Length: 102
Image 1 (cartoon, rainbow, N blue to C red):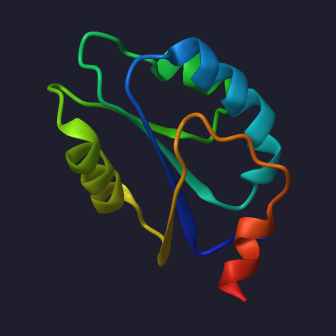
Image 2 (cartoon, rainbow, N blue to C red):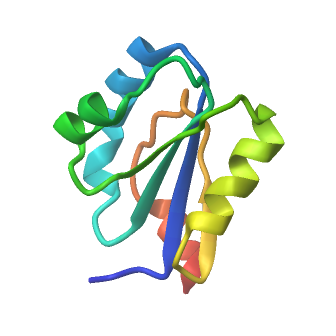
């Protein structure tokens, strides 16, 4: 099933924790558009993210945009009707966030 939600995950450094949580959370992403917004311009995380979750869209900013700028750029990249902003330090327990679409 395809859901009308884009999950936007902004990240700035702290990649070790982010990759660990992405591995845990990916089972709840099926049918959603997942956009990873990397706001640290000195690090390209595309390969590492794709190894964990190949369907993710990874955007590596060329300059630091700050939290709001990074999130807003992610929203502009999204193609779905709804946005679920998920911080990089979140561990999902289930896909109950999809119930908001009902």
